[in-house]
Amino acid sequence: MAVQPLIARRSLHDEIVTRLRDMIIEGTLKPGTKVPERELCLQFGVSRTPMREALKVLAAEGLLDLPPNRGAIVSRIRPEEIEELFPIMGALEALAGELACTRIDEAQIAAIARLHAEMVGHFERGAWAPYTKLNRRIHEAIFAAAGNAALAGLYQGLLVRTHSVRFLAQRSQARWQEAVDDHVAILAALEARDGPRLANLLRQHLTHKAAMVREAIERLYEDVTAA
Image (cartoon, rainbow, N blue to C red; front, side):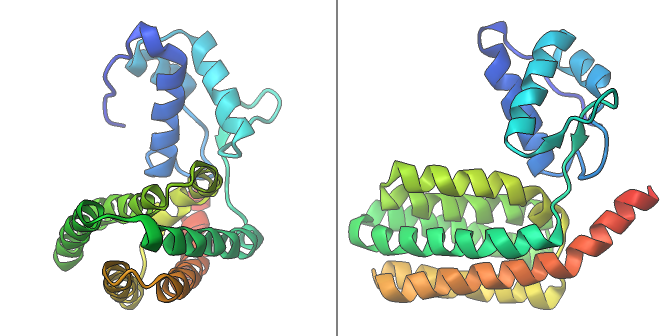
């Protein structure tokens, strides 16, 4: 596990929560595995009390399980949760897309276009991890352009819950190409400020993501169990 820099005391609780959440989202802490509490305390330079408080916060978010006397375990997403959560995320993204088309300015569109170009470059090089991070930034930028904090908050809660699986579950080349093609169409609709078309494209994009996760999730958890 990579060495983590020490955490400043002034923001101890929030920093521990944020770093642990990122480690789960990015797959450093994998679904179904135990959180190495002692090792992380040493790496972060913190005591076990704030670490355990942070673990409780992440358990409340659904990212960790805290079985009695077993330590914290990274939660697994069940296949049925994919069926429940992704349509909701698609609906939220569709609404954000419609709102964004009525409010977005040229500078915001240009920033998203730059992120898109960089993301496509990672796709062409087969660099999955940086591609995934830029993908997330693009979707977050659309929500920012929508200018609705409540909508963005609902989406972020679901995104955190599902993103670790989406990050780890590397898609087939065909699925990956499908996702890039989706993003090309999404950017075009955004540039045209075509809200209804963008909404439909974002719903479709989440349907494609759900299919990718369904295809990969069983294999992913089999690998974790075998390890």
